[in-house]
Each structure stands twice: as structure tokens, then as C-alpha cells.
Image (cartoon, rainbow, N blue to C red):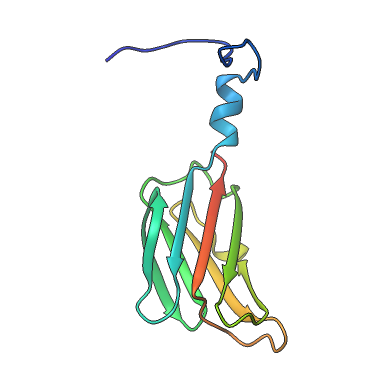
Length: 125
């Protein structure tokens, strides 16, 4: 295997400079899109080995390769076909290097709610 060592990467016209550090720190280390209703099923993913369904609106994304620490940034979104108002949030108390827990809810009542589509992206070390 060959190793390519560079200080700066550019496009062919000489613009859009990036350092290897910017690329490493700026790309998602894990992401997943999954169906959170009925039998939870991943539609597509990177570095997520499985989704654990722990009850209505409670999901855990399990990473294939652990993060270096639990101080990563996570972005999560949800959607349902019935056009209602739904939310989802990260459980920051249960973030670990190997998993990220999420809670889905109906915004008008705060009641736990399964979501037809959940997307999560994780950035960090």
C-alpha cells in the first residue's frame, strides 16, 4: 500500500484549498438514515453497526468504530408522512464513544413518538 503525504489539497484549477486536518475534522465520522416505526431498519449508513429500539421514540445508534471521545457533535432530524409536528433530540447524558441515544416526541404534547424517518450525523474525533 502507498502513502500520500501532502500539506494542502486543491482542485484542478488551483482553488478550493483544504488541509488534511480540515478534511479529517470536517467530515462525518458516522451517519445513518433509518425507519423508526415498527421494526426499526436502517436505510443507509456509514460507521453505524445497528440501531437499538428501546421503546416508543427511543433509539440508540451503535457505532461500528468507536469515537475517540464522547465530545463529538451530533445532528439529528426526523420526519413523518402525516405532516404533524415532531421533534427528536440527542440524550447528551447517554452519549458514549460507541453509541448515541435519541428521543423522538410530538412537539405539541411532548409525548414520546416513533418517527418514520430519522437521520443522524456525527462529527468529531
